[in-house]
Image (cartoon, rainbow, N blue to C red; front, side, top):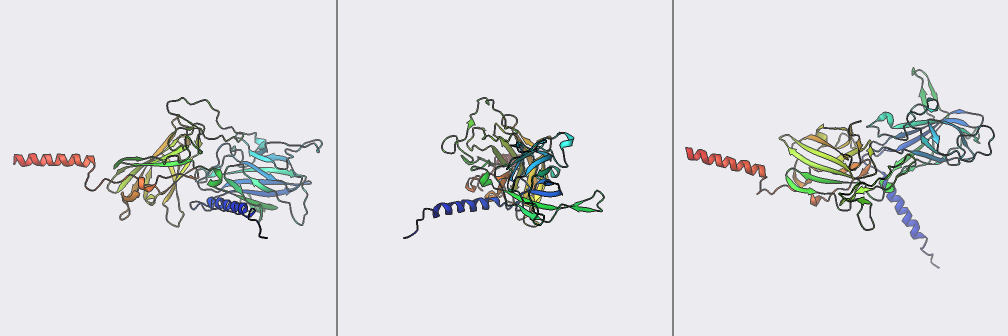
Length: 442
């Protein structure tokens, strides 16, 4: 009798979904980007060990903003956390089997969060207390990593096989998946005078990667286009991130209506669904690209970011744009920028972000919820053209997620060769009139 295929179809379907998620996690603009958890066992104790844990963001243009990371893992045995510095467990758990002083946390799967800035000094360690925020390294290298120290007890281990490893790590962040824990060569640490090196007794590492597919089923941004030589404004594609009605319905507030009072996301990790100003595209963030003016050897463009989310301020936002002329980027106003060299010497992809304390926060709609910049680019002979949408970006990424672009056939077109822009026509008429007057006088 032939086997029933009823079990084969679901397994195949799950494998396809897994492959899609894996493919989405690869980013050609940041192929080695990840968040790494490094666990260094520094000292053995009578009942366990003391370890230093580092959470480091190696992603070029993705960051972790408020409410921050919430690190979780499973203990291999009956371990407990006797003491912790630079972070804290969110719950103590059931510690009834201990007498006298109680452990900091007795949970089989603890959840550890970073301390807030300004925590008492005796609870701090080096590089701690950033409220779980991890900056992108080009924006703020010093704030791209966090550390804490943990005293683990009730550990059962064989000296010949080493300390048993925790498992199933999770950052508590949407879109991130963490791999298996692996043993690495022990980390080495220099003395202050750099003349002596000490090393950890044992080192483990976990790599966590990001997938936009896993983070959200809908995009979070879109792109609109305009130029000085065309009256056409190409809006974001309709329903780019959702619709006001239908299966992809997104809550929104119509124009002319006062914003209802709603609480902002809490530090506890609450991440409510976006509440947007009603638009045709229904995206939280819109990026508008405007070709502003053309000089003899240069051209100028303006980029505006608008936040239509009524519930969220985007702190430490960043924008990545791929354009063939960015290798000749001459000047950028009001933004910081960093060239991403992805293909050897070719640097046609640039990361932009706001100036601290000036425009590094993209505020909610209704609270001056936009930031903008202008850029000047040099025209490269034999390459620059206004034809075929060359002046428009190839890819736009906001906060690590790719934005929806309009279809190329809708891009603003150059005027026909038989027609002239209004200003040129005006000056031509004046020239002909003056020529007529001079001819009449002579």
